[in-house]
Length: 208
Image (cartoon, rainbow, N blue to C red; front, side, top):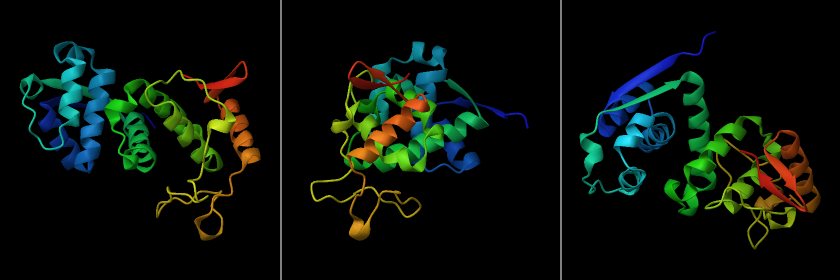
């Protein structure tokens, strides 16, 4: 079946409304989607809107920002595959990053791109380790890290990231995390095989 293509034109607010009405996106996911696609797929729009202005618009949760972006006609193009991928990326960021009050602008588009290219290849048993690696690399997607840098539990040995529709395979009794050093090392091996991370000397880094 051929991947369907979509084109949406208008102001940022107009495109958000279309995504809500025609694609059933919640408002915050629609804002995320517009931000990502304007950044990534619309060179003409980025040339007419500075990255700083795009960031200011996205960070303004109280709708007080009044800039050039609201008077700019934008075009975003995406396929079914891109739509599904970034829905998965958004869900991942909500669960693992945004709930820690780390915003998308701080995460950065380079790291978002890495998540998008990797997320569908990751097994459930490696999901938590990958999420912790992403957290380590916020602000520097080329950061080197080691297996011992990955902490899958809080100080009490428990997991703070369970969702109603997702339960970690390492979750033990009373919400205790059973992911020990051996399991982290095994996840690193799996992620390397999936070309998500690569060895650099005695350390590791994310693959772009």
